[in-house]
Image (cartoon, rainbow, N blue to C red; front, side):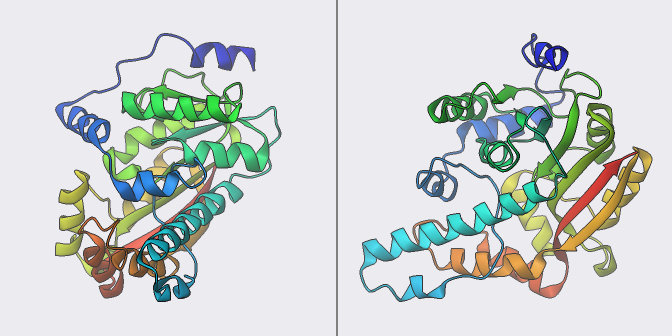
Length: 292
């Protein structure tokens, strides 16, 4: 444990490896989207992903405009928190002595959820210096900075100790990297028998090539959504064996339907997501794998 901690506080590796990664870092350093920030202000849990579960549609019937906005914001946050808890519940049996790795941690909500659920140590990595600074401030505010730390590093080349982690995950961050490079790093960091979990949007190979909607999502987020089959091929090449696969597409549609009606939070991409999910060209998957 001491060795792993020593490596996590060592001099950081160069965060970006390409012009594209620099553009991604610039995007997230500048990002101030209300759909991320306003939701997080509710309980200081800042997530950078979407939600799952049934919606309490009574929030839309609220007659007072201000109160309606507050209730819609709270409901969207409840759904995204449910997604974070769903992911954390698949990390396997963890003890307070175990370490977990949050690849592409954003403003840090997922690492906090994993710590609160399992009592474990967590290391989050983000290519955005601004996000890492923000997340560490939140951990200090919660008084858990001795257990939950965030690092301005590249998830493809962390510099962390080989085999130091009992579990690791990506939550909607795989579309920014090459899967072979990503899974090679997860396989290196995980101990034998460690658990890897990913929740991601992917395009449906049976539909054919990436649809127009998927292309629009790529352009909106400066990302490159992978086909569904690419995940399983790359995992097989890097000692990650899927043990559970769950299609969350139907479970996330209610979130997007509500978000589309949140005039104070819309980003303009909501209808594109809904169209892609409904025509079958885009899927929202959870994959759990063991490192063998």
